Image 1 (tube, helix red, strand yellow):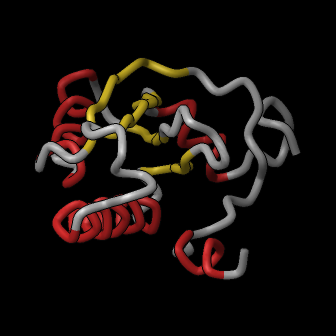
Image 2 (cartoon, helix red, strand yellow):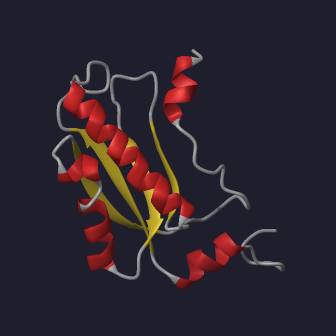
Image 3 (cartoon, one colour):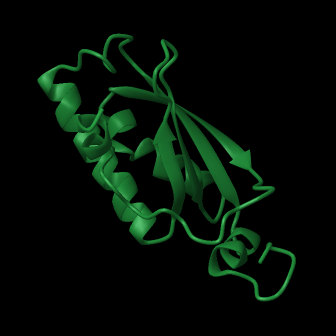
Length: 130
């Protein structure tokens, strides 16, 4: 059911009760997506786990990255009580905190939202199949 009709999904209720934000992530080093150092790979693993834990807690609604492009970037859509809390969440993302990624934060209003999130899975498993 869409957010405006009955029954209202848990996700739609969350979107109404707390502000939603989006942050855009870009690599701090242009070659990182295709040729990461061991340190960058370690930090990206921590970044993934940070977002995965937040997704399990239903703070993060969606996170992902572009594929097959020279312009590699990612996004994270999440809820936070206010701008300061949103800044805190983004700045504590290990990718940003450890300087591997750069982040830009924006207030966000979802116009459409699917009823069931896809869950948390490791994108590296998908990339090994291609």
